[in-house]
Length: 510
Image 1 (tube, one colour):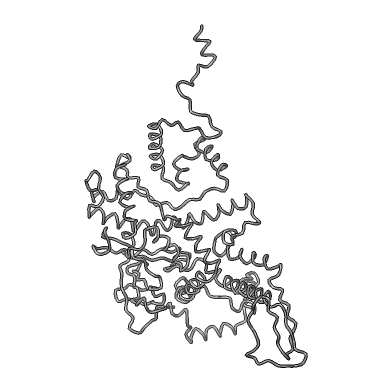
Image 2 (cartoon, rainbow, N blue to C red; image 1 turned 90 degrees about the vertical axis):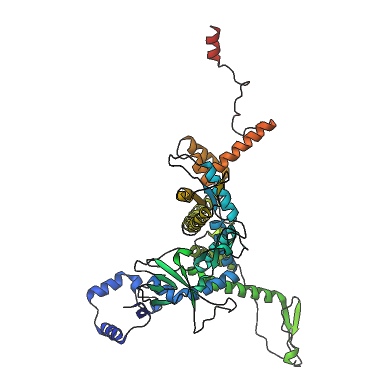
């Protein structure tokens, strides 16, 4: 059956199903139905799918509405806005991904000059006006925007533009709204390739071209039209990052999609509770005229204003005693927010800003679990976003002879050598830094880890740290400053403070 057969059955298929329903199920079939409770088809399961959906079917049917609702929740709902912020701050960090080069020669010796030259050039490229094509964003701004798009829409897309007109380096990144890829564009091509959700694939399911809708950004909501046109961009020039969660998945889905429905209901509940509390606090009471004098409807005050006693005339008033939100609201909200946090993959206390019921052990375990999620996202993003952009930039910069050492350009034929670089995501301070530091000292002392690994876990480059220490020690020595030893450690012995041990002194006297 073709793809579109998933959305409509033929008459033959319907007759076959009707025939199957008329057949009496076998004993083995009845046993299987009892054994697999989740396969039940009773009244309570009437809205539950019974046919497995492929990744293509899910994207085709539900991508548009799910992304639209995710965007609305990110703009309107407090907890979803907080979730987007957590993703942006923990994956990209406040300054984007840290870049470090450790260029080594064939004999394994560090080429420090080339490393520093590449780092300096990449830093310059990262400034506003260079990295992003509009000139309004730095590299860190663009990376944070990419993570925001991925969390909200399920994917982020950029186009690598080259040429003299795009910027001083002849290369820049153009951020693209994922909506410009038509998720319902699904057709075969005469060259044997197929288009799935706006992306052209070859027979091995490798992206070949991206078909972006050529819409005027002034058309609110990206209004479609009959004469649709596309801008076809080679896949080599496109960086497209999402987290694949199904075999054959070609587009990403919003990260918080399982929490969208509950989050919307909870937001509406909070709005109703706040409105009820406000009206209940504002309405002090009601008067009824015993003489039966009526007021015109236009004369009846209906605004909720604090301290108002309203005269409603000759009207019968039902009892109204607003007591909501009550004492159970807080526990109910906590339960709902825990479900939201589970669907979003973040800690409840971070999402809800609630530290009232946590202790050191629980908050530490929760932080460790959550940080592993952030690290996994950082690794995927660095490989599929940062690396492709760096490789294209490096080729362009070497060809233009823009990276120099002692006024000599680095050679293009060594381009593979100059790819020995790393992108590091942000790292986090420990809840109990003293205990963690002591554990690191013991691990290094017993050769369970290295100083370099500890420094990297803190989000720093070991070479940078050691060079900074070297410069600092030289500056202190030049100024005649002797730093005091940290508390709990013995100061380094000097020549004047060294004493001959007692046994050695006896031997010397003899």
